Image (cartoon, rainbow, N blue to C red; front, side, top):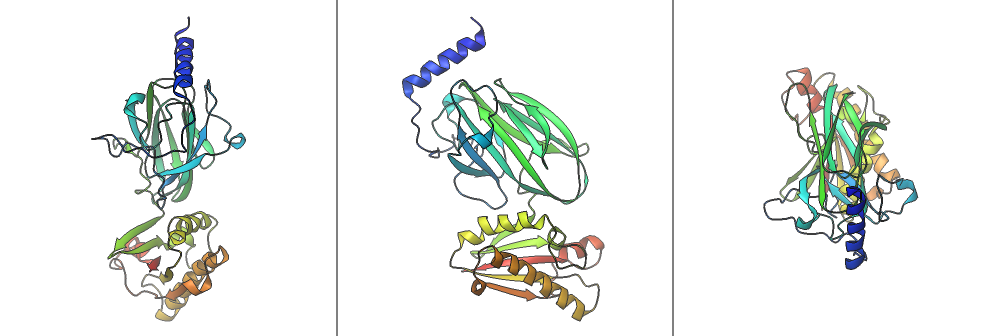
Length: 319
Protein backbone atom coordinates (compact mmCIF):
# COMPACT_ATOMS: atom_id res chain seq x y z
CA UNK A 1 0.00 0.00 0.00
CA UNK A 2 1.16 3.53 -0.75
CA UNK A 3 2.79 4.97 2.45
CA UNK A 4 0.72 8.14 2.26
CA UNK A 5 -2.55 6.15 1.98
CA UNK A 6 -1.48 3.95 4.91
CA UNK A 7 -0.75 7.07 6.99
CA UNK A 8 -4.11 8.56 6.07
CA UNK A 9 -6.07 5.37 6.96
CA UNK A 10 -4.32 5.00 10.31
CA UNK A 11 -4.88 8.67 11.10
CA UNK A 12 -8.59 8.54 10.32
CA UNK A 13 -9.01 5.37 12.36
CA UNK A 14 -7.35 6.97 15.37
CA UNK A 15 -9.52 10.05 14.98
CA UNK A 16 -12.65 7.92 15.06
CA UNK A 17 -11.45 6.21 18.23
CA UNK A 18 -10.88 9.41 20.20
CA UNK A 19 -13.66 11.40 18.52
CA UNK A 20 -13.59 14.86 17.09
CA UNK A 21 -16.11 16.55 19.36
CA UNK A 22 -13.48 19.00 20.58
CA UNK A 23 -14.30 22.12 22.61
CA UNK A 24 -13.79 25.40 20.76
CA UNK A 25 -10.08 26.08 20.96
CA UNK A 26 -9.64 25.89 24.71
CA UNK A 27 -6.09 27.16 25.12
CA UNK A 28 -3.35 24.82 26.27
CA UNK A 29 -0.40 25.84 28.39
CA UNK A 30 2.76 25.83 26.26
CA UNK A 31 5.24 23.08 26.96
CA UNK A 32 8.05 23.72 29.45
CA UNK A 33 11.01 25.45 27.81
CA UNK A 34 8.91 26.33 24.77
CA UNK A 35 6.81 29.14 26.18
CA UNK A 36 6.87 31.26 23.02
CA UNK A 37 6.14 28.51 20.51
CA UNK A 38 2.41 29.00 20.19
CA UNK A 39 -0.07 29.42 17.38
CA UNK A 40 -1.71 32.24 19.33
CA UNK A 41 -3.97 33.07 22.25
CA UNK A 42 -7.54 34.28 22.71
CA UNK A 43 -6.36 37.64 24.07
CA UNK A 44 -6.50 40.34 21.41
CA UNK A 45 -3.18 42.15 21.09
CA UNK A 46 -2.61 45.44 19.29
CA UNK A 47 -1.12 45.00 15.82
CA UNK A 48 -0.95 41.23 16.13
CA UNK A 49 -1.86 38.79 13.38
CA UNK A 50 -5.41 37.54 13.78
CA UNK A 51 -5.81 33.85 13.08
CA UNK A 52 -9.32 32.75 12.14
CA UNK A 53 -9.78 29.03 12.87
CA UNK A 54 -11.60 26.53 10.67
CA UNK A 55 -12.35 22.82 11.01
CA UNK A 56 -11.59 20.65 7.97
CA UNK A 57 -13.07 17.39 6.76
CA UNK A 58 -11.00 14.29 7.32
CA UNK A 59 -8.82 13.59 4.32
CA UNK A 60 -8.26 17.27 3.41
CA UNK A 61 -5.03 17.51 1.45
CA UNK A 62 -4.69 21.25 0.79
CA UNK A 63 -5.69 24.68 2.03
CA UNK A 64 -9.46 25.19 1.89
CA UNK A 65 -11.53 27.90 0.28
CA UNK A 66 -12.09 29.90 3.46
CA UNK A 67 -15.04 31.76 1.93
CA UNK A 68 -17.00 28.49 2.00
CA UNK A 69 -16.27 27.70 5.65
CA UNK A 70 -17.50 29.13 8.94
CA UNK A 71 -14.77 30.25 11.37
CA UNK A 72 -14.86 28.50 14.74
CA UNK A 73 -13.08 31.29 16.59
CA UNK A 74 -9.98 33.49 16.44
CA UNK A 75 -6.57 33.64 18.07
CA UNK A 76 -3.90 36.36 18.03
CA UNK A 77 -0.12 36.30 17.84
CA UNK A 78 2.70 38.75 17.16
CA UNK A 79 4.82 36.07 15.47
CA UNK A 80 4.51 32.70 13.76
CA UNK A 81 7.16 30.64 15.50
CA UNK A 82 6.21 27.00 16.06
CA UNK A 83 9.31 24.90 15.26
CA UNK A 84 8.97 21.34 14.00
CA UNK A 85 7.52 19.13 16.72
CA UNK A 86 5.56 15.92 17.17
CA UNK A 87 1.80 16.16 17.62
CA UNK A 88 2.03 14.22 20.90
CA UNK A 89 3.82 17.18 22.56
CA UNK A 90 0.65 19.19 22.06
CA UNK A 91 -0.53 21.83 19.65
CA UNK A 92 0.55 24.94 21.57
CA UNK A 93 -2.03 27.67 21.84
CA UNK A 94 -4.68 25.65 20.02
CA UNK A 95 -6.48 22.62 21.52
CA UNK A 96 -6.27 18.88 21.75
CA UNK A 97 -7.61 18.64 18.23
CA UNK A 98 -4.65 16.92 16.63
CA UNK A 99 -5.51 17.27 12.95
CA UNK A 100 -7.87 18.55 10.25
CA UNK A 101 -7.89 22.27 11.04
CA UNK A 102 -6.81 25.46 9.29
CA UNK A 103 -5.84 28.92 10.53
CA UNK A 104 -6.06 31.96 8.26
CA UNK A 105 -3.70 34.58 9.74
CA UNK A 106 -4.04 38.18 8.56
CA UNK A 107 -3.02 41.66 9.64
CA UNK A 108 -1.16 44.89 8.87
CA UNK A 109 2.51 45.70 9.17
CA UNK A 110 4.54 48.82 8.49
CA UNK A 111 7.83 49.23 6.66
CA UNK A 112 9.70 52.36 7.71
CA UNK A 113 12.31 52.11 4.97
CA UNK A 114 11.57 51.09 1.38
CA UNK A 115 13.61 48.29 -0.15
CA UNK A 116 13.88 44.58 -0.86
CA UNK A 117 12.74 42.25 1.91
CA UNK A 118 13.18 38.49 1.85
CA UNK A 119 10.74 36.16 3.57
CA UNK A 120 11.06 32.47 4.45
CA UNK A 121 8.03 30.38 5.35
CA UNK A 122 8.29 26.86 6.81
CA UNK A 123 5.42 24.55 7.68
CA UNK A 124 4.07 21.05 8.24
CA UNK A 125 1.54 20.76 6.58
CA UNK A 126 0.67 23.40 3.96
CA UNK A 127 0.87 27.19 4.07
CA UNK A 128 1.18 30.29 1.90
CA UNK A 129 2.40 33.88 2.27
CA UNK A 130 0.44 36.73 0.72
CA UNK A 131 1.46 40.41 0.88
CA UNK A 132 -0.80 43.15 -0.44
CA UNK A 133 -2.97 40.57 -2.18
CA UNK A 134 -0.08 38.90 -4.02
CA UNK A 135 0.92 35.30 -3.32
CA UNK A 136 4.67 35.19 -2.69
CA UNK A 137 5.23 31.70 -1.24
CA UNK A 138 3.16 28.57 -1.84
CA UNK A 139 4.03 25.37 0.04
CA UNK A 140 0.52 23.94 0.11
CA UNK A 141 -0.27 20.24 0.50
CA UNK A 142 0.25 17.43 3.00
CA UNK A 143 3.98 17.06 3.69
CA UNK A 144 6.66 17.06 6.38
CA UNK A 145 8.30 20.40 7.15
CA UNK A 146 9.37 22.22 4.00
CA UNK A 147 10.38 25.84 3.37
CA UNK A 148 9.88 28.41 0.65
CA UNK A 149 11.52 31.80 0.12
CA UNK A 150 10.60 34.95 -1.78
CA UNK A 151 11.96 38.47 -2.16
CA UNK A 152 9.70 41.47 -2.57
CA UNK A 153 10.12 45.22 -3.00
CA UNK A 154 8.17 47.06 -0.31
CA UNK A 155 7.47 50.76 -0.24
CA UNK A 156 7.64 52.69 3.03
CA UNK A 157 4.24 52.55 4.68
CA UNK A 158 1.55 50.08 5.75
CA UNK A 159 1.12 46.71 4.03
CA UNK A 160 -1.29 43.81 4.39
CA UNK A 161 -0.15 40.25 5.19
CA UNK A 162 -1.98 36.93 5.07
CA UNK A 163 -0.61 33.50 6.05
CA UNK A 164 -3.10 30.65 5.59
CA UNK A 165 -2.00 27.38 7.23
CA UNK A 166 -3.53 23.94 7.60
CA UNK A 167 -2.81 20.76 9.53
CA UNK A 168 -3.89 17.57 7.80
CA UNK A 169 -3.20 14.19 9.41
CA UNK A 170 -1.36 14.19 12.72
CA UNK A 171 2.24 13.24 13.59
CA UNK A 172 4.06 16.49 12.82
CA UNK A 173 3.41 20.24 13.11
CA UNK A 174 5.43 23.35 12.26
CA UNK A 175 4.83 26.96 11.22
CA UNK A 176 7.52 29.67 11.10
CA UNK A 177 7.72 32.96 9.21
CA UNK A 178 11.10 34.69 8.98
CA UNK A 179 12.35 37.89 7.36
CA UNK A 180 15.66 39.46 6.41
CA UNK A 181 17.02 42.40 4.48
CA UNK A 182 20.37 42.80 2.79
CA UNK A 183 23.03 40.43 4.09
CA UNK A 184 21.50 39.99 7.53
CA UNK A 185 20.49 36.57 8.81
CA UNK A 186 16.87 35.47 8.82
CA UNK A 187 14.97 36.24 12.02
CA UNK A 188 11.43 35.46 13.10
CA UNK A 189 9.05 38.06 11.70
CA UNK A 190 7.43 39.90 14.60
CA UNK A 191 4.64 42.41 14.18
CA UNK A 192 6.10 44.25 17.18
CA UNK A 193 9.07 45.23 14.99
CA UNK A 194 6.82 46.29 12.11
CA UNK A 195 3.92 47.86 13.96
CA UNK A 196 2.37 51.05 12.49
CA UNK A 197 2.14 52.45 16.02
CA UNK A 198 4.11 52.22 19.24
CA UNK A 199 2.06 51.11 22.24
CA UNK A 200 3.51 51.73 25.70
CA UNK A 201 2.33 51.29 29.27
CA UNK A 202 3.41 53.95 31.76
CA UNK A 203 2.22 53.74 35.37
CA UNK A 204 -0.73 51.64 34.27
CA UNK A 205 -1.74 54.07 31.50
CA UNK A 206 -1.74 53.10 27.81
CA UNK A 207 -0.30 55.47 25.20
CA UNK A 208 -0.28 54.96 21.43
CA UNK A 209 2.13 56.97 19.27
CA UNK A 210 1.77 57.13 15.47
CA UNK A 211 4.11 58.86 13.08
CA UNK A 212 2.17 61.47 11.13
CA UNK A 213 3.40 59.98 7.84
CA UNK A 214 1.30 56.87 8.55
CA UNK A 215 -1.88 58.94 8.65
CA UNK A 216 -1.25 62.09 6.62
CA UNK A 217 0.63 63.40 3.62
CA UNK A 218 3.12 66.19 4.30
CA UNK A 219 1.40 69.39 5.49
CA UNK A 220 -2.05 67.76 5.09
CA UNK A 221 -4.72 66.93 7.65
CA UNK A 222 -6.95 64.56 5.67
CA UNK A 223 -6.30 60.85 6.19
CA UNK A 224 -4.39 58.72 3.72
CA UNK A 225 -6.34 55.75 2.27
CA UNK A 226 -4.30 53.22 4.29
CA UNK A 227 -4.89 55.06 7.57
CA UNK A 228 -8.29 53.40 7.98
CA UNK A 229 -6.67 50.00 8.62
CA UNK A 230 -4.37 51.44 11.29
CA UNK A 231 -7.10 53.35 13.13
CA UNK A 232 -9.44 50.35 12.94
CA UNK A 233 -6.78 48.18 14.59
CA UNK A 234 -6.28 50.76 17.37
CA UNK A 235 -10.01 51.03 17.96
CA UNK A 236 -10.67 47.28 18.10
CA UNK A 237 -7.60 46.19 20.04
CA UNK A 238 -7.27 49.12 22.48
CA UNK A 239 -10.15 51.60 22.57
CA UNK A 240 -12.87 48.93 22.50
CA UNK A 241 -11.11 47.15 25.37
CA UNK A 242 -11.56 50.29 27.56
CA UNK A 243 -15.32 50.93 27.31
CA UNK A 244 -15.36 53.37 30.24
CA UNK A 245 -12.18 55.31 29.40
CA UNK A 246 -11.59 58.78 27.98
CA UNK A 247 -9.20 59.19 25.04
CA UNK A 248 -7.00 62.26 24.59
CA UNK A 249 -5.67 62.69 21.05
CA UNK A 250 -2.68 65.01 20.72
CA UNK A 251 -1.15 66.26 17.49
CA UNK A 252 2.51 67.32 17.25
CA UNK A 253 4.71 68.85 14.54
CA UNK A 254 8.42 69.48 14.07
CA UNK A 255 10.00 72.93 14.49
CA UNK A 256 9.76 74.01 10.84
CA UNK A 257 7.30 76.87 10.30
CA UNK A 258 5.67 79.38 12.59
CA UNK A 259 4.15 78.53 15.93
CA UNK A 260 0.72 79.61 14.70
CA UNK A 261 0.85 77.40 11.62
CA UNK A 262 2.13 74.36 13.53
CA UNK A 263 -0.52 74.72 16.22
CA UNK A 264 -3.24 74.90 13.59
CA UNK A 265 -1.95 71.89 11.62
CA UNK A 266 -1.53 69.76 14.72
CA UNK A 267 -5.05 70.67 15.93
CA UNK A 268 -6.60 69.78 12.57
CA UNK A 269 -4.82 66.43 12.54
CA UNK A 270 -5.89 65.59 16.08
CA UNK A 271 -9.48 66.51 15.22
CA UNK A 272 -9.35 64.35 12.07
CA UNK A 273 -8.38 61.30 14.12
CA UNK A 274 -11.04 62.07 16.75
CA UNK A 275 -13.65 62.44 13.99
CA UNK A 276 -12.70 59.03 12.56
CA UNK A 277 -13.19 57.37 15.96
CA UNK A 278 -16.48 59.17 16.49
CA UNK A 279 -17.76 58.10 13.07
CA UNK A 280 -16.82 54.52 13.93
CA UNK A 281 -18.73 54.29 17.18
CA UNK A 282 -16.73 56.03 19.91
CA UNK A 283 -18.86 58.51 21.85
CA UNK A 284 -17.96 62.16 21.35
CA UNK A 285 -17.90 62.75 25.12
CA UNK A 286 -15.04 60.26 25.43
CA UNK A 287 -12.79 62.05 22.91
CA UNK A 288 -10.62 65.14 23.35
CA UNK A 289 -8.46 66.53 20.51
CA UNK A 290 -5.50 68.79 21.22
CA UNK A 291 -3.02 70.44 18.86
CA UNK A 292 0.31 71.02 20.61
CA UNK A 293 2.42 72.10 17.66
CA UNK A 294 6.18 71.73 18.09
CA UNK A 295 6.07 71.31 21.88
CA UNK A 296 7.23 68.14 23.64
CA UNK A 297 9.57 66.82 20.90
CA UNK A 298 10.51 63.16 21.27
CA UNK A 299 14.04 63.90 20.01
CA UNK A 300 15.94 67.11 19.18
CA UNK A 301 14.92 68.68 15.87
CA UNK A 302 18.46 68.43 14.52
CA UNK A 303 17.91 66.32 11.39
CA UNK A 304 15.21 65.29 8.91
CA UNK A 305 15.01 61.86 10.54
CA UNK A 306 14.50 63.40 13.99
CA UNK A 307 11.89 65.84 12.70
CA UNK A 308 9.98 62.91 11.18
CA UNK A 309 9.83 61.30 14.64
CA UNK A 310 8.47 64.49 16.16
CA UNK A 311 5.65 64.76 13.60
CA UNK A 312 3.21 62.42 15.31
CA UNK A 313 -0.19 61.79 16.84
CA UNK A 314 -0.42 60.38 20.36
CA UNK A 315 -3.50 58.80 21.95
CA UNK A 316 -3.68 58.47 25.73
CA UNK A 317 -6.13 56.13 27.42
CA UNK A 318 -7.36 57.76 30.63
CA UNK A 319 -9.27 55.43 32.95
